[in-house]
Image 1 (cartoon, protein in one colour):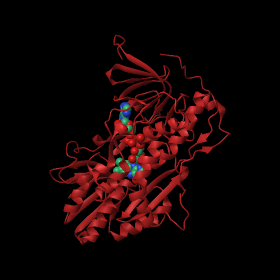
Image 2: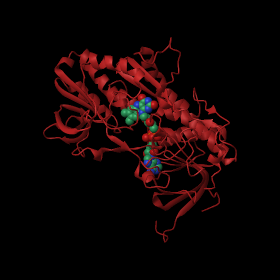
Image 3: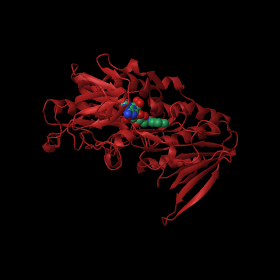
Image 4: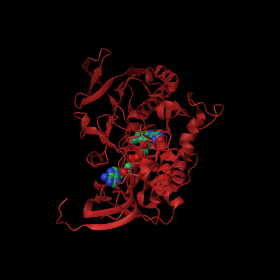
Length: 434
Ligand code: FAD
């Protein structure tokens, strides 16, 4: 940054970068505990999206408009909203630089920028998404096109792809496929449609307990499963997709498949602004302790949601449990108290295996399953209509009116008094620096 520029500088107790699920939930949890905190939110978007709803938009269950709200309506009045993007971080100065030559100083920083969809990793895709039968529920505003394609396809070939991990909501690529297959089956068209799932991964889903139920749907819908098969290119005119397949002996081969409908899940990477900052780990994600969510080097910085490197599944369900942990630890840190709140890695993935039924995957660090409900009510490893009811009717209001408002339903942080004390005592921050 040029030193000759005049910077508009302001100072807050807490600066939050990103007003998605993680940023807004953290603001709500902070204000619930300490309403007099001065908080700035850095968020360039005028709209906030409930992304977990996009699977149901692509399956013809939700309207797109129900998944989007005005950002201004969701930000508490006491919070100063900067409609800017963060462009660089200066953690030694306790500053973040924004577009329009704005500099914000902070006592504590929360980084919640989400991740970047890396469409450029697929040759030939640019400019062709949203037409010619190519869609993605991952792209804001595109799930209605998925549903349009599902409704239109009478016969031919439908391919659903999944890139290498990490991706947000690891089950979403197959959720889109099951809902499409369910529609084709009910409409007696499925026998005319060749459905393939092409995943870069070595297994259909990362937590083995859910595989039997998922495999029963793969068989029911007669889906061809191509594992270790990564989409690398598209020839739009020829309607052909190119994949790099890794064989059992580690050799690779390039294969082509024709499609009439292609649902693409892009590779997902850390945003450039983080990757290029001192906050990043070697892979570009914000480098935090996976239990306290505190940065490993800068004690007054916390991160959560999709941009953090904690090895949980990147979901809004994870954010619901992370936000209260960040809020409690951040306030402890500001008051020179020991950090006590711990996140156990909870994440959840409601796999929409058919319209009206869900396999509700819930797990913590290490892939250990961690159901929220007793087995007699919901057995997450089996398709359940109660889980569908939860996803369709309960989770959207839980998101808008509980999680984003500081009502931490079933999200009480775990407390531990034996966390290493040196973690939050590193002399990296100088709160008075400008
Ligand atoms: P986001 O919600 O993406 O928000 C990031 C915010 O940061 C955005 O508002 C963005 O504008 C802002 N930002 C970016 N760069 C900057 C910058 N430089 N400066 C300032 N602000 C910036 N989760 C579930 O729990 N269950 C599900 O069933 C589920 N299904 C999903 C299905 C699909 C198709 C998708 C796409 C996601 C799904 N998820 C699901 C995942 C869930 O939506 C995400 O994990 C969650 O939104 C992460 O929240 P976040 O705040 O980290 O990121």
